[in-house]
Length: 306
Image 1 (cartoon, rainbow, N blue to C red):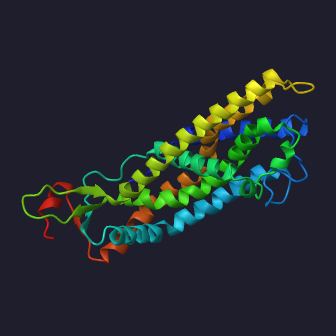
Image 2 (cartoon, rainbow, N blue to C red):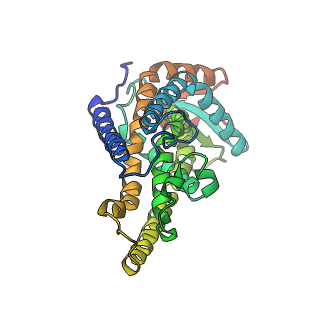
Image 3 (cartoon, rainbow, N blue to C red):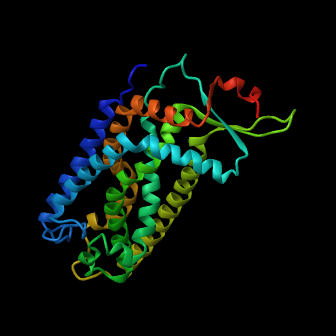
């Protein structure tokens, strides 16, 4: 089998975008435009200033990538057993035969879903003040009016999402491996009943898509509402000295760009996932093979004995 590789043009484009954003954030912070205390940094639990905080993001990405490289088959095996438990043993399991097809070409678009799942979780955390304050230095924005708290939420969301995004891939890599291995399930049916066949990895990915869709919609709608409410307050009761246009754009831009920026840490982990794919496919196939799973053509699954 030919070893798959992700397009380095895609990875490079993502990293350039993230690095430019990091550079702008650090420069604006040091100029006093963003009110972060550079001695404390953005992430309260990590040592160093804001520049080191961004470096920590990539340190975590490589640590998580190493975990994905070595541990994904074991986690995939656990999720398969969990699927059997959740479906009460009502499914037969088979491994789809990919011999004639080899490994499918890289699916870089896979990285998009983890970014939006991270957005949903981060939005929930950023709205719980006590929890968000454990991570993000939101008191840096303490001089803002209460009606402007949407800025605190959106900035908290952006930085919490960047920190959380690479960890999210720990959940997705095992699902991707089950997909790439062709692990499918068939509902145990009676004769003359159409077989219900589906990928085990897709079983979990559908849940993730549902969560990402609902949480993203909620995050966008509430941010729009809170931002409009804040604009109305500023127009009716302008604060001394006013606000710069940049401050006006922070909430909207933070929400819109956060999933794109999350692809920076996620892409690092995904590169390591693909580089370990051949090894991990063989390891996972060996694990489920010891459980007695068959390797069959997908169109012959419905003819297998229950």
